[in-house]
Amino acid sequence: MWIAEGFVSKQDELVQVNESVEDVAVQFLDELIQRCVVQVVAKSNTTGKARTCRLHDLMRDFCLAKAEEQCFLRVLSSANQSNTTTVTSTQLRRASIVTSEVSLPTQCPHIRSLIQWREKELNLKIVCEDFKLLRVLTLYRVKTHDGYLPNELGNLRHLRYLALLDSDINTLPESIGNLSNLLYLEYDPAYVRERGPLPNVLWKMKQLRHLYLGHDIPRSKELKLHTLTNLQTLWSLNVSDWESEVELGKLSQSLKKLHITGIASQRLSDAIFRSPCMTSGYLVNLMLLWTDGVKLKSTEPLYKHCQRLQKMKLWGKMEEDGPLQFPPNLVKLMLHGSENKLHDPMVATGRLGQLKYLNLTYAYIGIEMTCNVGSFPQLEELYLYHFENLEEWRVEEGAMPRLKKLSFWDCPNLKRLPEELKSIPSLQDLKLLYMSRSFCHRLFKQGEEERYVYQVGAGAGVADNGGERGEDFHIIQNIPWVEFQLN
Image (cartoon, rainbow, N blue to C red; front, side, top):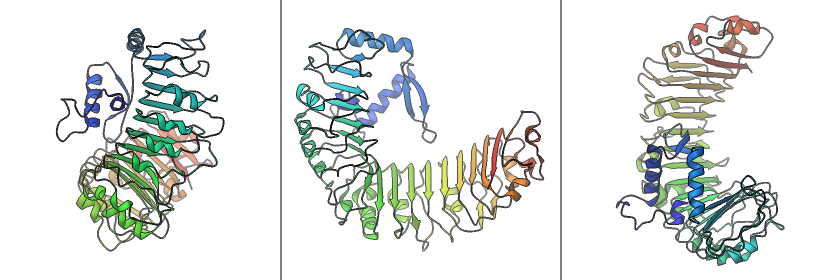
């Protein structure tokens, strides 16, 4: 949004040769955080970057007062506009409306940014006709009388940022292709049963840098994207209806974040892996989902070309002809449904020196799994779900020294926890859900209940639930929180 407003631009002297304007915007945010102007509410568990920020109450009041004094921004809410129903100011440049009690500021022709949060019906035609200088338009939980955006949307030639979130808008007009200056488009409708297909006009938005699409939006079969050479984010693109692989083979090399679902043929899968975005080496976040009957042939292209990749989720089966290889700088990895039998996933993933988060779901159908000596040096969270054949999990000395969370779900044949877990002092949270009764009895010999929680320092602990300690209780006795449930 800063970039759309022009606060950060390519002409900024702070933008270095190999930096994007997005990188500089993040630096600006980091500086505000360091100066305690902005407070961090939540950080990414894997990268440590700020995910959610806020202003202190006093700082927020001061900023809003100054912004309104200089006609920079006005926030309209029931709290500060209890006796006002209409806003008029020819000098107002930015408005944020967070209540349905306030009418649109139709007498403010110079508005550059409009953020509208309301659950009552809104006449979007008025927005498109009265605010032709808009650069930023965000509509959240907005209702319309027919579920359509008006064709007049295409007249907002200055628009650079458009977000349509949790609304009942089920169709985008073809005139959206006229927004030649658009940098950011997010379209994620909610509570819409019948959604129209995405119009095949996105190729006209040659300045577009970020495209976020909601789930289950019908797509045109021949959606053209190869002209979007500035695109950095392409998220939640469903290609299940695509007949041709040509466009997938031309995805921009500038892409940093890519999420494609519904890969329904080997032809489409191969096209993705030979596209410029996969071979350029700029990707940092990748999610791919294959349908039944299609397999990932090899992870070698990812290891070879995607050295900068930090987050990756692969959902679908894999061929087992070659070894598992993953990009070395991965911080977060999720494998779902790979059903590997020949290759223990712990061996390949254990070599990833930066990995902090690992989720394996239906990923392995072997009976033994081993964490080698010194493997997973940075791993903090490990989730093992639906390992139906797994009988033994070995953890060798020095493996996972920083592990904080460990979760098992539906591993019915696992016999016991590895003894070495007791030597990981950082482990704080252990969940053992839908495990066999014999497995659980080695920890707690329960009474009649099927779900237990053991908490260090909580007195008698399991005895309060009618059970007693089992022969492997010493493995978990120093873990602050242990929760388990029978299958």
